[in-house]
Structure formats: structure tokens, C-alpha cells
Image (cartoon, rainbow, N blue to C red):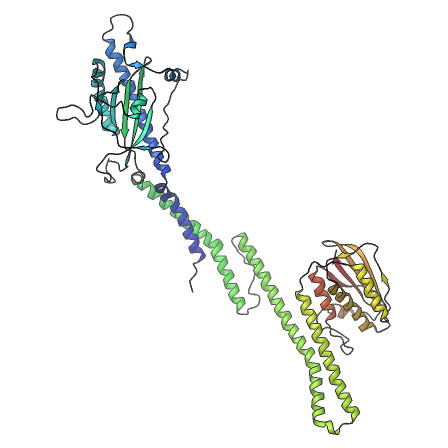
Length: 546
């Protein structure tokens, strides 16, 4: 048999799973990766804006050397910016931020950066500006690790952070990047960013190295616009931080947070064990004691911990009390049944033994007397068995959808007993009294009461029946009163008349089950029966919901 886990173990495992979800979810979801890419894009935009401003200033400084008087004709520099770009820059707003919007989950990942194409010859101004910007670019690269290229308005590289060759010329210097989509967009005056696959032979550097393990690289291109002219563009690229390396860099903080979370989880597990596992264990122990037959073992817990456990404890205690009460009832009932059967069976056995031993010595009258004793006791046993079956049926009956009219049924029953010689005046209610009860069960209730009255009051007893509408505990009800002028019930016996087998007319054929059967039937239909006070005889009041 498979051993079931303890509740505290299940709760602890669930809490640990909940703990692990955010930690491992960061590595699994690309949401955090996109955030790292956007962070890289924002940093590149900031660097590019600074270099673009420096480039514009270098152009200003370069041409100011040749101005001897009046304003310089900037229309001869670069190329004009499109009208929509100028309108956006001159919309009256003080700031024009470039917001990062790359998303690894949605944006296309381009192939590795293509090789630069042969470029046009650089003009003197662009060449001079590139030479001025080169120290700034190299210093920026040393700190930010970003690849930086500056192109003129035709897309020709005038400054690059790439390594210098044997001839001292920087990588891609004088080459054209105009075909690149990000550069093409920037030379139209529109900043552009995209994600490219990374070209590197070392995708798995050490965790503590400066190199990054990401297989993609972020490229951003920003236009350089000055005096309404596009002077060129700044192209920057950098590999973003990957999730695992970010976690590695913050490993000590993560470990501290993990320890704190584990501590909290342990506290929560202990709390749940105290509030759930311990009370449930106490309930199990109570149930174990109850199964061994210990009376009163199931009691409401003093510290149930939770509302549900308190409810469960209360209901189990109530159920245990009802089962003990039922067991006592069955035990007492069995003893009474045994007693009821024992008396006639003893009489039958004695009569049979006498007949067997002394049949030849007995007169016909004595034989007949003993046979009559046997016959009477057999009849008594037969009535007792039928009554027991009726009581058993009444205890387990389930109400159906049958409907009757109480007034009409009572009128018919009264007429039948009147024909048999009983004085039975009946007062019918003027109101309709529809009841949801079967005709058979309703007749059984009323006939048991009438037979009971005749058994104790004799053939001359008068039984009055009255039916009327009343307000019951759960709504409108029919109240049926059956009163006789018989000897009545003493105060000592009044509390026992509904107990099974209690009767003072056993010699007259009473079984003591009639009133028990009537009460059980009424209980099944939500009704009640009570012995009301009466100056003479007995007065029973039956109430059945309409």
C-alpha cells in the first residue's frame, strides 16, 4: 500500500515550489531578457546623444575658422532634414527623449552585421571632425565597452572605435555603412534600434569576466541634426547582459534574499503545521480511540487552529454522539425485542413440552387449552414481527412526491371506524389541507392513534377528530387533534409512551410500537406528535407541514 504523505510535508513542498517559481521563472521567461535589452538600448541612446552633440559642436568649431564676417552658409553642409523630422523637433516641447522599445519576444533578430562597402571620399570637414571625435570615442569605449562608429551624411565612417590595422587605419574607416537599415534610417533623421546575432567565437566566458555571454547584440543609430541639416549619424552597438550573468553578479544579494525567504517559508510551514496538522492529528487520535469503543472519545478540540478544523471537530463530535446514542438505542431495542420474543416463545415451548410429555394423560379440554396458548402466542409473535417491520420501514422512509387532502382522508377513516362501531365525531376544517405525504403512511399514523384509543378505552370509547390550519415552526401546517374519553395516561407513564415496547396493555395484545411507528413516520415528513393536556382521556396533537 502506498504510504500517503503527511500534511505538513505537502504544505512544505508546496511552499518550496512557490519559493522556487520566481527564482527559476526569471531564467525561463524572456520578459527579463527583453528588459535587459531595453536597458542596453537606453544606455546606447544616451551615449549616442552625447557623441552626436559633440559632433555637431565640432562642425561648428571647424567652420567658424573660415568665417571672417557674417553667417556661415550651413546649406552647403550635409543634407537637409525631412520636414516631418524638423516639425517634430520644433513642436515647442522642451524635451525629445528617445525611449527604448526593443523586445526580444516580438522584434525580429537580424543576422550578424554585414561587412562595410567601399565608401565615397570624405570631405575635409568630415575628416577633420572624425579626427577630433576619435579620442572621445575611444575613451567612451574603454568605459562602456560599446562599439562606436560615426558616419557622415553619406554613410561613410569618419571615426571608429575598432582596432587599428598594421597601417594604423581604424577598422571600417572610410568604408560605407549606408546600406545598413539602422544607418539608413538615421540618415533620414529617424533614430533606429535593432537586434542582431552576435559574431563571436567565445560565447561562454567566465562568470567573473567582463565579456558577456549573450548571443545577440543591440545596435542603435542616432542622427546628427544641426541647423536643420543632417550632418551624419552615430552608430553604437553592445552585447546586453544575459539573465544568468545578471543573477551571478547579484548572487550574494540573491542568496541573502533566498535565505530570508526560506526562513519565512519555514515559519509559514511551522504555522500551518500548528494550525492544521496538529489539530488533524488530534482528530485522528480521537477517531482511533472511538474505533476501539471508548465512549466520549470524540470531543470538540480546545484549539482547532482554523475555522474549517473547528467545524470538522464539532461535526465529528456531534456525529460520534449520535452514533453512540444510536448504538445505545439499538442495544436497548435488541434487549427489548429479545424480551418481547422470549415471553411468548417460553410459553410456546412450555406448552409443547407438556403436550409432548403428557398428551395421553390430558383431557381433550386440557389439550385444547394448551393449543390455544400456542395459537395465541403465535398470533402475538406474528403481530410483533409485523409491527417491527412497520417500525423499521418508518425509520428509513424517504418522502416522495405524493399529495393528499388531509380533510378528505380523515373523513374517510372516521367513516370506516364508525361502521366498525366506534363513536368518532369528526370536525372538518373549512380550509383545504393539502399534505405532501402518501395516503398509506397518513392512514398508518391516524389508525395507530385510533387503535391505541380503542385498545386502552375499550369498545365504548369515543374519539373526537378535529383538523384545522395552523402556523407551524417552518410555515403553514395542518394540526390534527385526536382526543378520547378513555382512562388517560398517568404522569409517570406520559414521558414513556413513545418509547418502543412500552405498553400497559400487553395482555390485551398491545405491542408498545404503535406510537413509535406514528412518531417515526411523522418525523420523516417533518411533522410532530405530542401528548397534550386533557381533563379526561388522552389528547394527541399531530402537526404536518402543508
